[in-house]
Length: 268
Image: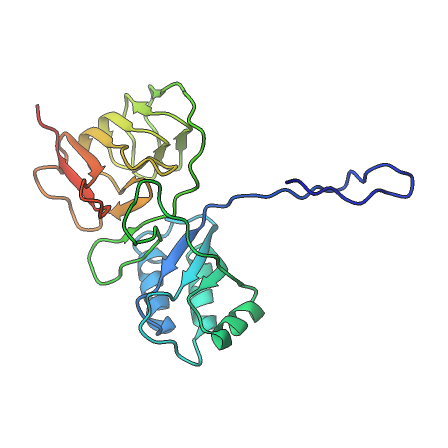
């Protein structure tokens, strides 16, 4: 419910501000280790200015989640982690899973205590939707918490007829995106529905941006920097298999409920 300022002496409402409830989509950094120096080093390696994906984030808010950590150290190296997050263009706003002492430290640093995470629509098991950076593999995967379900509405398909150059970004809000020309490296195509690229896909493609787990990405020549379905991301630092690299292929989520990203050839 909106909150308006108190009545001014003249009897008129002050026009200077109005408070409204807001729903924010935040990434979650799910920590597997309490050694924040190691976490910071891995973040810098993947997303720092000299890392493998320096432009992956753009001032994205993030929740630091300790809920799956095995232990809680008395003196966490907050300064090291916060400096790394800033270098990776991430803005920490909240923390989760800390004991009272460490939560007090986090709050003094300007973080709030994060509420329980929202479940991804359609997920029936006990696993919550969270963002995570896996540092033990060649491929970086991160999943993003889905917003609350919104009222569906019909939106026209967005059709792109010209190539997208590096630095260009196109978002098909509420519907599908169809590209009839190349998506070059450094370009991004985002859609709440499916993404169809009838040309080489060499940039980033993110389908199901608002949590549609049934969305898919199709390309006649799959050579992407990054692909994502409903917030589950995969970068292609390690080359894709020969049966899909540069070939007609699709990207989808697995049907087993584990939210694994599947990249497979398009069958004629």
